[in-house]
Image 1 (cartoon, rainbow, N blue to C red):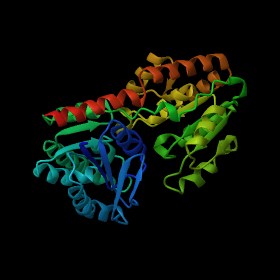
Image 2 (image 1 turned 60 degrees about the horizontal axis):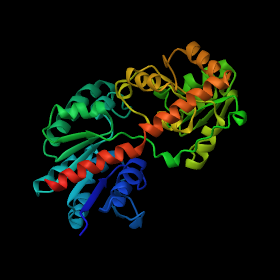
Image 3 (image 1 turned 30 degrees about the vertical axis):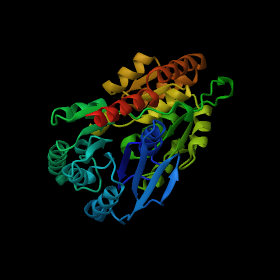
Image 4 (image 1 turned 90 degrees about the vertical axis):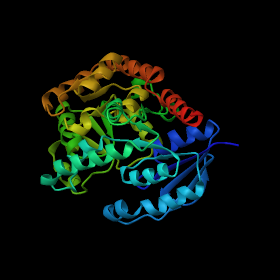
Length: 368
């Protein structure tokens, strides 16, 4: 009989890349009986994974306060051998499952206490206090878990200090087959691109202004947050150099990456960003285009070790513009950087390497 695995989320969509396409599908293909409980989902079976929907609450606060009950109820009905949950607000659910003798994994996608320091929906004067409170609660609850899966080594190190449970990092590296490698540089445009959330702190103004100063096209895809930010950015004189596509799917993303000579990732130096491993970085590398990214120590170690791009002060417009010009005016140099990045992804920064780590954890828990 197959071991039963149940993943739980109250926040993420049904086909979240990390939860569904990476973790759940990998476990199913490895021979486990995998279920996924999702707030607001439609009951179905996809890629062999059994998906169960429970009630979704309309706003953040009711979701945080009320989602646990229906998710716990469905989780107990499934009666799995291992439960794996993905949202801090489900820590109480994890604790209750542990109390019933179940093996429970907490998947920490982000360094939540540091992230809270920049949450716009929390008043600034309260953020430090809320951050400390959340860290206390999170640390105390993970001690009840069988294991912690961290999305970055930084998060892994944090939890290793507070629990005796197994703590591993399973990084959010790309699935190679999803990224098109376009090495036809003769057909590329004199353009750079960015795909992702369009926020002030993710460098939207710097990207638009620097591309304009370098007189190259900026291919921009994603959703603005808040929505009013779009009007402000569109008022920039350099916006005339921008091709805006809105939110696009994987096929369109691959086309956009294939047309571009470099990918931008100019996140501001905020606590929650400095030790992050954004999948966009590795998607640019997998697509075979150079990376122009923020000069955070962790990112510099990846980019310069791989020889796949350049790192800059994300708020130095002159330097960003210079690097954009340097790459777009030297296609052979850009091609070499792109090939280096692709090689690094094929050898190291891909989901296959992380899948092995995840499966080793599961087998360890089931054999103990």
